[in-house]
Image (cartoon, rainbow, N blue to C red; front, top):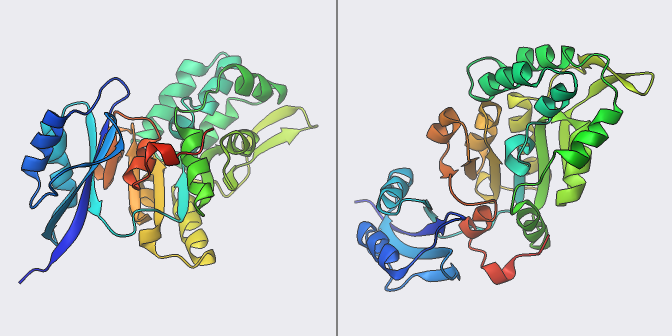
Length: 302
């Protein structure tokens, strides 16, 4: 006989939508043994519905059913215990920021469309990340390093909710790391703007202190390295898998997402969204706080 367990379904309205009592009633009708009333995390925006079910319930399938009943709403089903995580790893490009840094750099070399096409294929998992990165970096040879300052100032924008997510988790004792297949010349600055404890990424080779050489230091920090960083930090802080969270959007995030206690595909490429245990398609990054049971009034402002 399968034992019963306590679960929580979290519903989060997209930035253009809202939750109401009728929608929550539809969600409760889908859940086995739901609580009598939802728990509001943010009135009209996010709510928890506790419920009981067999311990081996298909959490992902149940979340899909909830999404089907509530278009434009993100739904996550997970065990009720241990929702607040102590280690958080996040991708940078198209996750914590809205852009792909290498594509913006390539624009200064007149090659944005060409480089962006390679980036898209790599993030979709259609081509291997490492050779694709070497190919794109080679096209940047001779570009002035000062261009990076211009890109950061004029083109890079933090994803809504990024600062609140990281700063709230840190205020509650979590260690946070920005892990990127991009470059430290960007991650050092972006991590500081958002509030991460640390960042890890690739190093671009610079000639005479002011020009890009068109090469990247080996070994390349990519899919395997992101997973390895999660395992290393988990061991360093003496945490279990269940105490960790990771988020990303591209194929090089898949192993990190799979290794985390909660692995989140955020507005992700189809291959990633299909594989990740949790996906956020409508909300901003504060959705990752609601998933952990944080109320809006607990958020630390950016």
